[in-house]
Image (cartoon, rainbow, N blue to C red):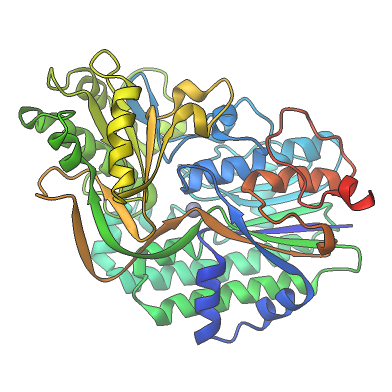
Length: 478
Ligand SMILES: [Zn+2]
């Protein structure tokens, strides 16, 4: 039996349905006819790094320690690297059990880990790496060199600069050309042997959504290419094989901005004289986050010059200046918001100046007014030894269709967005084929995929997993 897993960054039932109304997607249509579909619940915050980390570890961010697209350690921002996590990942369990694995396109992991098979890294790594290294030149992994387009001419360019130089549509064309090359690479590697588990993580549609959400033709072409990849996988399925299409989070329309710093100032948590401080924080943060997410960042993250940073940090940039900024805010500022244009924002408290109870009771009023949807404490969202490493002690979630901004200049809590824009959503998609759908659970989460695969391969499920198998065989037999 082979278990195929296709990860589609940013795919959801909603955006897939939109694609269906405009485009014929024959392979999606076939698998939806043969299999079953669910919403797949992501983790908070629903961004790429913690969501895929939870998908491939089966545990929540409090256990794997990846909370966002960046990590805050000693008040300094670092890009996360799954190699630094102390939990095993899917490829570890499978390799230990002697299963043959093909793992392609995993983001935020560098260098490629040793597996019983082949591993090729994905986005948000300093450069593509391949395991086994010596076979790279033999096998090739064209399309997975995510840093290549802005790495030409020896000078590594900021992706944002490259998007500005080429224009978004031309950059989008490159993304589609890269996907075509990845389809060729993936099918060639799929055909090398009969794998026990083959995982293909695709950075689209999310990358195209972020870049040209308003460009319906480009979005449709993205879905057509993804549909071709679905078809290539299905063409290789034998009777006892299974196929899962999963996403890390959804993506949908956004029409409003919530200015959380306006509210923090109005409620005495943030002081005007400290404007330099939080704006410096948000500038540094948005520069790093923008570079990591490939949009919006105006500043190339500065490279840490000293200290023991690993290669990922040197390449992607860790900024020492944030250390000073977070350590020396205005003496009355007690809360700093850290986010980058998402529906969810961290609120980081200076705990000597306020308490989570005080802030929460004020935020509760904001929630009751309908301005935000949810307020969570870190211990409500997470469990495990890394909970204290969460970026903020409190997480706020705006209403669907609203993104949170940390800008200080806007006078007022909200602003309407004109034109079509989009943002991440909590609910992604799960499509399964070759799985007993009669007992498929109704509210699966990204953490359920790993235990499901282990169960299907009759491997033991460790007690510390947070996810549960999608098909509850025990209840099915009773
Ligand atoms: Zn993502």
